[in-house]
Length: 284
Image 1 (cartoon, rainbow, N blue to C red):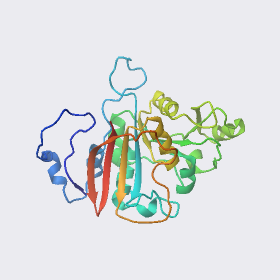
Image 2: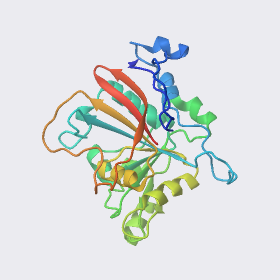
Image 3: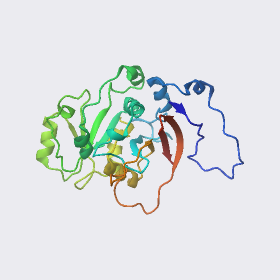
Image 4: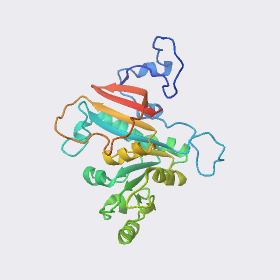
């Protein structure tokens, strides 16, 4: 894996900057070119902004209360999956980054359809991230938060019955009381984050942050990511661009109504391995 080029902070506009040569990469990164990065090096590269506030922090703090990043993969022609799953367009390096992002997160937010299609299991504790998580006061593994309006989920699956950290279910006030009881009986914690049948994105991420889950990661699917993007609560997008063409009519990484105006994100970093581009964009 190699860093393609150093990227300067583009999240704030500058006034008529003069043309400048590209700066050299920091000295501690120059030895990372053309070799496999360790998980610790990837963790440094993908670290969440610091500090993030936690419940009880004085209201005068300027630090963000939470940070929601998304991790998605797309082909060159915009497909977010092939034959219904994302694994076919992924790579070993993509999965290393996938694991790293999970290793840094307090909570992984995922839509119910993605849970069903991708066969989600509980997040596991990994020795490579144990010391880092302990130092940051995190649980041994991130919680999985499943977003579902219908609660049409198989609560007998290990995701609900045997997670290291209790699984969360995010739903709306119109959810079936019987299905809520089924979820809670299986060991899940149900969070109502909307007045209708589904969640309200801002209420969902705020409810998680109020529980101390401030380092937030969503893995989609496209409809859920579209909701977060449309609501303006998505802070960062980690997008893997796979050097593949699938043609067909597969979903894009987001789904939903068109935004009135496109939202601008700024490039924060680019890595490359075997033709796969691993990009990070932050909302301006």
